[in-house]
Image (cartoon, rainbow, N blue to C red; front, top):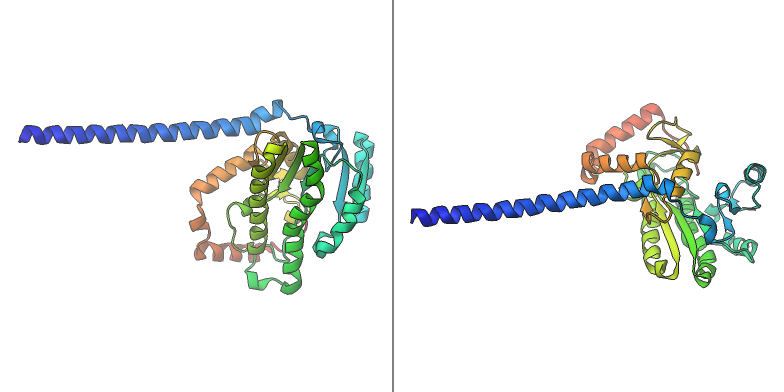
Length: 309
């Protein structure tokens, strides 16, 4: 009986060892695959860049890659200044369409008319805005009735509406690229940025679903979900290893086209995402204690001010 019992114990121990070994092997393979994906997305992509000119003649903010561009934004003077700079530095044709995306559906017939006859090969949906207080409880939003509508019109409505205008011709040609700028707050929910975070979640899921629908038709839809980038919306915060300038980030993010359908845009932000996932999971980050600490810190440092990107 003792011999049988020992045999059973040893058999059970062997079984546990096999299960443990398989589990370790699984996670090692998973880690290896993830490391390879990151290496391919952010290292190899800088060497094996996709020729974006194959997507068509027109694109937004891609003149450096040899494409002509159409700029659409609310500030006509700023548009003209940027257009002159691009034409002078890169020698690319540039058109401008001044519109305010917070005005809702009424602006899109005019945009469609301006784009008529142009072969749009690449669409970059980069427009976005926050509420007046970037880190605040939802009910603290000033002019909430108007502001909520403006943020939804700008951050959400603009993405499917602009896509609707250019996607049919892309499908006919059998090629096209749509880059939608989301945010890491659209991947990991961020209290005190509730409305902004929710709108960017829409962009993330819309991009992923659209890519799944149209990739078989030659259309690439990429979602770019970065952490903080030094822009007007972030008060042009100081650039460092983790805080990219808009120019540096755009350059690195473009390298990932064709290598990833959903990306943080640059290696340093991928590292931040990994650390955030491990050290500060959603359940902890959304705790009442941390929300109060963040709100208190924001008030102390006066991190407020309405900004658009």
